[in-house]
Length: 191
Image (cartoon, rainbow, N blue to C red; front, top):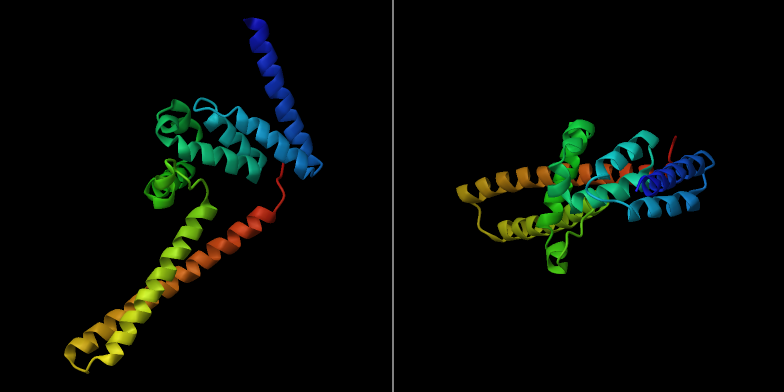
């Protein structure tokens, strides 16, 4: 039994060494292969350690792979002592928010699994929701213009102005998030 444990530990050490070297040499294809191998070994017991490692190495591909796993298995991972001890509160909140969004995602629900594993999908969903809000706003504004003026029309116009301002603010926020995600996705991993 001890030999098997030593072999497994040696394999993990070799994998980590290969990842560090691939990051150092900017060998993106090798990074993807190693991240794939690490991802295949993910389970609820090692997910928080691997998330900590991904953050320490500043390796976006590994962080995304582990985050997707954690989001899918949030109930089991969040019960562990490692979750409370090694995952910073802001990261916990980010993953819990993604898990809640994934759970509420009708596309993921219809597929029988949580399909939203990363922030890119969350931003895309927010973008779609804003598009629908913008369309409803434009319909309401057009309807208001067809109505006859009066006190209720003035009240409705004020409400629509407030709604337009909220939509504009949210659109700007989603655009900033998308730009931030695109720039972080193109940035190389650091060691």
